[in-house]
Image 1: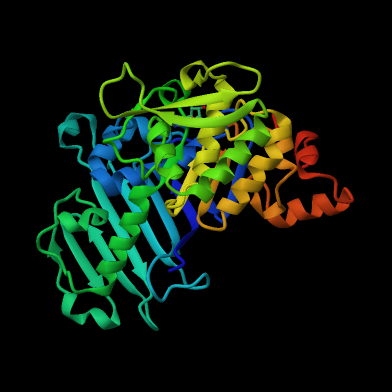
Image 2 (image 1 turned 30 degrees about the vertical axis):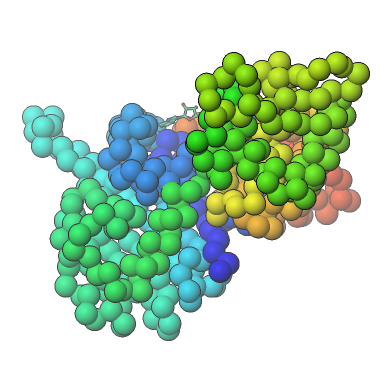
Length: 403
Ligand SMILES: Nc1ncnc2c1ncn2[C@@H]1O[C@H](COP(=O)(O)OP(=O)(O)O)[C@@H](O)[C@H]1O
Ligand SMILES: [Mg+2]
C-alpha cells in the first residue's frame, strides 16, 4: 500500500480563493505573516473534521459558513470547495489519480427570504477501478454511482442533505459492495487522521494519564508523556530519540518516565537528567525550547504516522545550529509519510530541495497566492545564482514569499 496525496485544491476558504498546491513527500511553506500558510493547513484539517464529525460540525467549529468563506471581493461568496487528489484506491497512479472534492454552497436569496437560506453540499469522488473511472456523486439528498463496473448501483441512494460521503459508514442504505465505496472509506480513514501539529508547551509539560492512548501523539502534544512511554517500549527507537535530543540539547544526559508520587494514579511524567545537576529536572521546569524540541523529535520518530502531518512553524524556539538535524529527521520521516510544514527560518530553508520549497504571498485583494512561484522559475533563479543556498536567496527576495 503506497497511498499518498498528490495535490490540494481550495476555493474561497478564508484567503484561499483559488489555490492548487501539488504535494510531494515534504513541502515547506514560507512567506509573510498572514500570507495564508496556516489557512492551507486548516483546509486539510477541515476535511479531517468532515471525516470525523460531518460537514455541519466542521463548519460550526470554525464559526460557520460566513466566517469561513472568503470575505474579499465585491459580493459575498456563495460556495467554498476543498478537494484532494492522490492515490488511495488500488488502481490509481500519479498519472491517473483518485479525486475528491467537497463543495458547500449557500445561495444568497433576497433579504426578505433570509430565513429560507439553506446550505447544500456536493461531493464528488472519482476512482480508477480498471480502465474507466467511476464517479460517486452526492448532491442534495442522493448518492449516485456512475461507472462501467457499477451498473448495479446506478439508482440513487437516499442520504441526508448535509451528510458527507466521508461518513458513509453511518448511512444505513448504501451500496456497500461497491469498490468505489471501499475507496471512499480508505480516503475517509486517511483524512480523519491528518493532524496539524502545533505543540502546546504548557500542556506537554504536564503528566499524562496512561489510561489514555499513547499510540498517537495529539496535535497539541498534550499527551507527550504517554506517547514517549509508548516509544520507550521499542529500545532502538528510544536510543535514537535520546541521541537526537542530546545532539540538540547537549545538557541532557537521560530522559526518565516516572509516576509522580503526588499524582492521581496511573500518570506518567517526564524527568530530565542534566549534566552538572543533582537530582532530576521535571519537564514542568525544563526550558521552553527543550520541551518543544522533544515534541518535534517525538513526532519524527512516530512509528505509526498518518498519511499526512502538517507542522506549524517548525523552527519555533529551536537554535539555528539544530535546524539541520531537524531537517534531516523530517526528510527521513517524509520517506514514511507526507509532511506539509511552515517556517520563517532561512537557515531551515537552506536545507531544502527546490521541489520542497513553497513560497507564499498575498495580493492586495486579500487573496493568497500559493505557490507564489513556479518550480521551473525557482530552479532558474538557483542556477542563475550559481547555486547559492535557497534560504539565502529567499531572504534576499529572489524567490518570492517576502514582505
Ligand atoms: N474568511 C476570511 N476571508 C478572508 N480572509 C480571511 C478570512 N479568515 C481569515 N482571513 C485572513 O487570513 C489571514 C491569516 O492567514 P494565515 O493562514 O493564518 O497566515 P500565515 O501565513 O501567517 O499562516 C489573516 O489576514 C486573516 O484576516
Ligand atoms: Mg500561520
